[in-house]
Every structure is written in structure tokens, then in C-alpha cells.
Image (cartoon, rainbow, N blue to C red; front, side, top):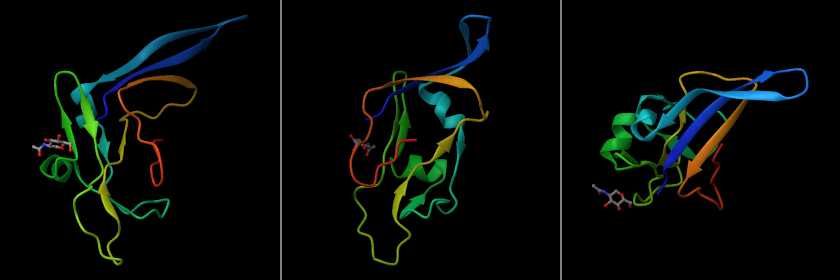
Length: 117
Ligand SMILES: *[C@@H]1O[C@H](CO)[C@@H](O)[C@H](O)[C@H]1NC(C)=O
């Protein structure tokens, strides 16, 4: 399970200290409006990124009043020639440079083949 609260702040430099202000925040089903990447993995990993509609249909994502979840497929049997396990890759609609990101996660995947970036 993954719940994400992301608050993005931009740094505004003052003479001796840095002041941050919230520029964007994303909660729960806001992530459904992010950009869903479904082309081949640019890092050549063994993964099959799916569209948002496929992710919803395959129960790889869901959003409720309190959570947004992303999952990788754990049910399909893959053959060696398959591109990889169905998974999700999303990006914020805005690109940021000098920023601070704050995440509130219930669970961050760890272990082999996970790459929370
Ligand atoms: C979606 O997957 C989660 C995690 O495996 C599971 O708890 C839930 O029951 C599934 N929902 C449906 C509709 O299959």
C-alpha cells in the first residue's frame, strides 16, 4: 500500500537564509492526473509500464478519499520474452529545478528490482 502526500516547495534565497513556500501539493487522486508513462523503459529495465486505464483495470492503482496506491503486477506468469512485469511510472505535470519535496508515505517499496525515484 502506498499513500503519497507530496508537497513541493520552491526555495527563495534571502541574504542569509532560505525561505520556502509551497508551490504545488498533490494528494490522493490528484496523482491520477499526472502523466502516465507507458512506453518502453528508457533505462532498459525489465518492466512493462501500463497506461492509467490498464493500471486501473488490472488493480495496479486506486485512489480513495485517503490514499493513492501504486502496485506492480504480482499475479501474471511471465515468459522470458515478455518485456517485464506490468508496473506504473508517473510524472508530475510540472518539471521543477531547485526544489524541496516532502513525501508522506505509508509504504515505500524496498528490495530487489524496486526503484522509487
Ligand atoms: C487490489 O489489490 C489489493 C492489493 O493486493 C487488494 O487488497 C484488493 O482487494 C484488490 N482489489 C480488487 C478489486 O481486486
